[in-house]
Length: 94
Image (cartoon, rainbow, N blue to C red; front, top):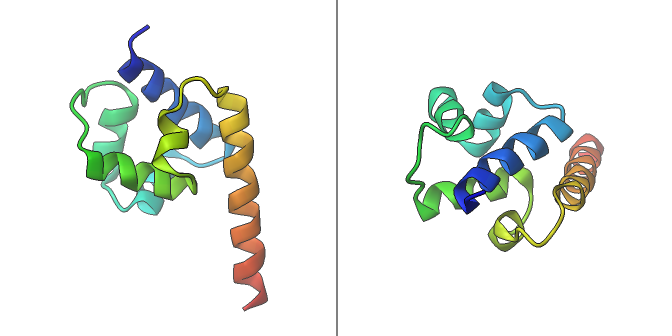
């Protein structure tokens, strides 16, 4: 499997692990829903570095973690889940 295809699967896996719809995630990533939909379904083949940075930031992880295919998707999803939970708790204390 090519790396770009592994990335598409990873994006979907992590997004679903967070319980986010494509629309909600696109909103977090500050990109259009249709654009993100094209990315996740593999219709958008050439991703810019700035787009990859937006995606990793929305997941709350460094870009290097998102692109590290040596890490299991479950480990990446768990790290993201902990970050999102901590962020929600911090926001509720304000």
